[in-house]
Amino acid sequence: MKTEHLLIIRFSAIGDVAMAVPVVKALAEQYPHLRITFLSRPFARPLFEGLAPNVGFMEADIKGEYRGVKGLNKLYRRLTAKQFTAIADFHNILRSNYLRLRFNLGMFRVEHINKHRSGKRRLTSQSKKRLVQQPTTFENYADVLARLGYPVKLDEKLEVLVPGLEGNPIDSSPFHVSHAPVIGVAPFAAHRGKIYPEEKMEKVLDLLTARWPGCRIYLFGGGGKERETMTEWAAKYLQCTLASTVAKGLKEELQLMSRLSVMLSMDSANMHLASLAGVPVVSVWGATHPYAGFLGWGQTADNCIQTDLDCRPCSIYGKKPCQRGDYACLNLITPKQIVDKLEIYLK
Image (tube, rainbow, N blue to C red; front, side, top):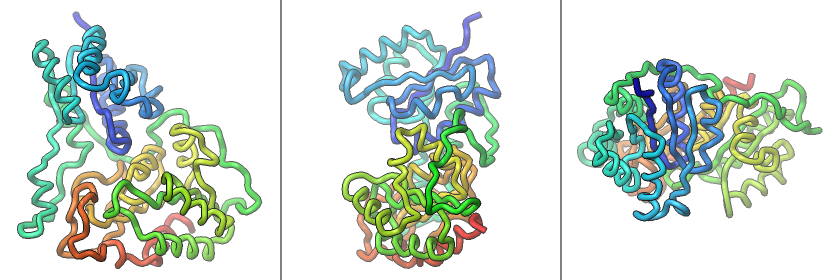
């Protein structure tokens, strides 16, 4: 009997790849006889290594060695040598579609994700809006597996899902009082419609350090100008430290996250990474909405801070410019609202 060997494809982005982890873990546990290979870009390796004995990771540099049609053909030849018995496309974009076409022509069992775009269009419509919860990304991934003959039961429990997060304790600091809270703050996201205004976020830091002067705050994410802003905050508030100065690489960032009392995040990748580390997340939502199906694994709607406006949500990914021009969805949220919600986990 031929060994069942499933290939799962999801190249990016990091938040969406992170959302695949609990689904793959559940699949591995419920089908221990099934060999599973997760194909993604190199950054994702720490999320899957050691996840389960029957889970392997395969990296593909789709912007380098496997770039373009020629590169994808090379990748396809490499994949067929692995003798997969089924292919699950968790991405459904041009690159994975091309690979899927090749696998279909090769008579492989192939299924791909349904992103429920029509429901999401109604969710963001300004004239015929239907504020209805869409299937979550976790459910969409599980649906692909079910159509391949591997239905999985998902138990959305907040717990540490990535192995190897023990060790590497938080660095000692003269500003951190023993037993005082350790807080993560991820203030940025990929698009303007998902970012809480910088001046208001600084007020959040001001309130946190005033209420808990012995706390430790780690600032996650950000590059370029965003990193400059966080560096300024770290210089102003002695309790603040850039996570990147303590944790080198994704694995160490996850280790650091696992020691947090709570994470404050936008609708961004850090919400999902903190969820994998078993940390409660207070999330801020502006142009986007949890109903689109991207709330972190094991997180609750009670911890989502958002403003009720007729125009919300206006975007699934936060890319669209504000139709009002004032980003009221974010500006109407007060720093006190955020700190009061965080306080639940800081007492």
